[in-house]
Image (cartoon, rainbow, N blue to C red; front, side, top):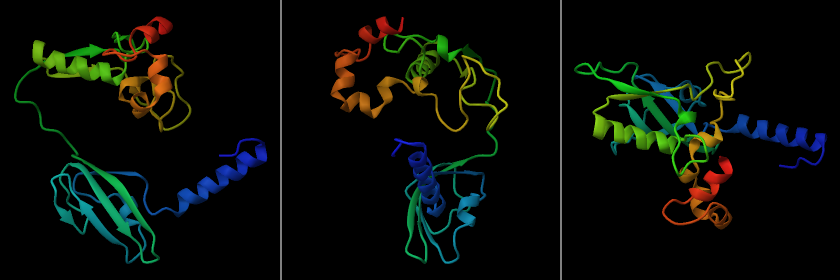
Length: 206
């Protein structure tokens, strides 16, 4: 994207909006229960769908899919094609068979030797696995990780998410980023060995 001048930025953003408006499908769709996502019902007449379910089935319709992460391919009459992930979630979850207990965790205070001075989702996954195996915990409750409203007004907080549409970069975790595995500069700057981004980055973050 050309950002050399305000006019260049405006031109680039206009072109991007035009590109997004012309696409058949967004990269990811979400459906609830047995309904069909609105983006699929709004496709041009004559569009053919092919759905590959998480269970390995192939269908010609996105209705009445089981919960899971599926893949949908759309072929429009004008020759445009699109492929998207289709996440189908149940409208309700069954109650657990009995009483359970869990841990309340503020993600930003969950520190490990491999984080950047604040907890990330990799640390949260490790804690959840350990709590279930060693303590018999049934759940982990965390502080809000996404904005409560899609736009302003929002309560500014250093511990809250900054945006509703984008993930907070530091909670994603450097270990889960593809660039942390492929970038030589990232590996060199953050050390090497089994800890990866452990001690050098930890000392800088602290």
